[in-house]
Image (tube, rainbow, N blue to C red; front, side, top):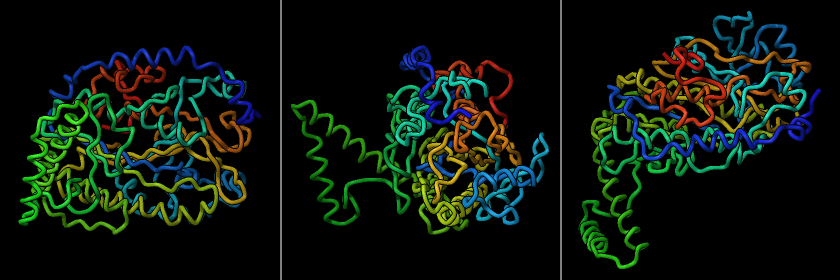
Length: 459
């Protein structure tokens, strides 16, 4: 069997592929999305990053006897109990069945009701290749495979052969920013601070907190007190001074813009309807609660397109994977159901699609304590426009003899992130002619001109 080290050592040069992706990025320029500007209604994408590399082979598990036996044999001390799995309704076209981690009862309900779906074995890829290329080492690989820094970057940039600071959500915003009211509040809203996914050449993220009015600002500035009024007057006068130095002028301009944007955001958030849906006290649920509040204020913000980003950290389980996931996966499951209920209450569940990302999957084999860095992994999509109740993509046959196994139960992806993101971007309003500007490597896996969707999980 090809070892992981041998697979990496004997891979082909990235040169030609690098040139292809780089030339596509250069085409971005200052274009704007005609498709988005003419698209009616509201739409939002909510990206949930499970940072560290979620062990998704214990999130979505083979439930039929034959494949569970293989899973149990390979995972050894990391295996869940077959009787504990929350078996999903229906089977795949291959006749196999699957179950969710026992702590994800809410997700099981979402899947069963058609509000959520699973995407199997997704990962970063530079080109399409077959199992023979995996084994003989002729497959061209993404840069820095198995590296946290490189893979978490590539999941956000969709550029598998370069380290860049612009994400595919940012590139969408560069194209679509004019569709929203230009009031200083970006169409990209982050609950996790600065991030690559929402960073474009012209548009970045607007960072908010999960509590209160969310918006960052100057402490006690115009807070209704006598001191706040005095402080506002002092700050406004300072910012009105014409600065002779270019850096001081730019700092004053940006601070003035941030103060004005905060005022717009806070005022808009006051118009958001009070939610009767309850949210758990954990940070993930509270972040989703704040996102729901912002979506509720979309009209006041003048927003017809928005992306949201939230990171949930701590998934690098080199040890104690069973205990850690038993604590962490239920929080994801509960938060998603609460968010679904809030979006239904707001009347926008059909207009919001939530999806997960992560650095990579993990090894099926145990290191004696946990699992190590892998490649392909399984993901969740949720929304009223999701063709739910199905598992999309190809869940690999778990076997030590599977040629997609590059060593230690690390499976090469059978669905690229480009296909995954192309379906999301197209639903969001990116036109076929602009798709390869957002996803420079997409044509290696999917033709934007195709009449068929990349995967089919969105209506």
